[in-house]
Every structure is written in C-alpha cells, then in structure tokens.
Image (tube, rainbow, N blue to C red; front, top):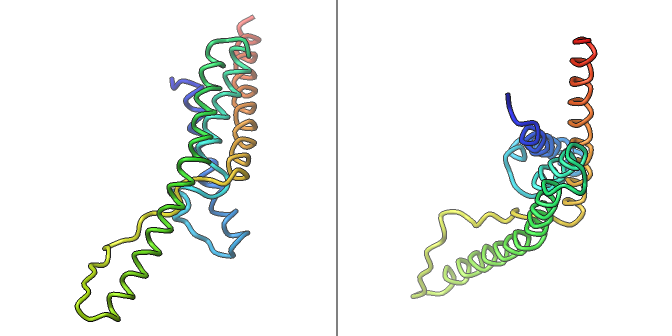
Length: 163
C-alpha cells in the first residue's frame, strides 16, 4: 500500500499540472497541452505538492509534531525557491535569448563578424509569480484536507464494520 502522505503530495502535483491547461485556455484562448509537463504558470505544482503534504501531516500528526515542522520548513524552502531563484533564472534566460537574437541580427549586417546562433533558446518559464505560488498553496491545502478526510472516513467505516 502506498504511503498516504506521498500519494497526497503527488496528487497535488498532478492536479496543479492538469489545471494549467484550462487556466491557460481561459487566459489566452489556446489549448496548450504542453502545459501538462511544463514549469511555471498557474497554479504552482511545487506549492501544491508541499502544501498538500504539510496540510495532511498537520491533520494526521498534529501541528506540534516533528513531522509537521519538517514538512513546513521543506515547503517554505520549495516555495521560496519557486518564486525567487527559479523566477530570476527565467528572467536571466529571457535576457540571454534576447541578447543572442540581437547579436545574430548585428552580425548578419556586418561583414567579417561571425556569430553562431544557438540551436535552441534557453527555457524562460522556470519559476512562479507570487500569485501562482499562492494559487498552488490554496489548491494544496484543499487536497491535503480532502486526503485526510477521505482517509478518516475509510478508517471509521472499517472500524464500524468490525464491531
């Protein structure tokens, strides 16, 4: 039997990734199925995963537990990274891609200047805006609560039938 905490976190990831497709359609009018496997966008699957895990652990083990403390710190680090470092990396990738395009155009206009264009651009959508992290966190709380409640109902039904 799979660990319920792991299943809860994986459900957070899958649900957030799936929701990116219809949310992108609502925003841009395009069904872009590549969003299922992409990074960035609304909601953050990183936030959804760690928040669903932390919520489940809080309800299962209690807020004073070491498990909750570990999952909370882990979650905060992941969400900070998704918003901060990964977002900034994406911004740098945009600048590098733009610079590469400009150099390519300039070298085409100048004789004697050689520039080998990159085979592919750097990936620009790496991180999340704060609203995307918050959206993932709200989704994660809902998934964590739902996971806990559905587990509790199964446990209660099993104990009721054994009497």
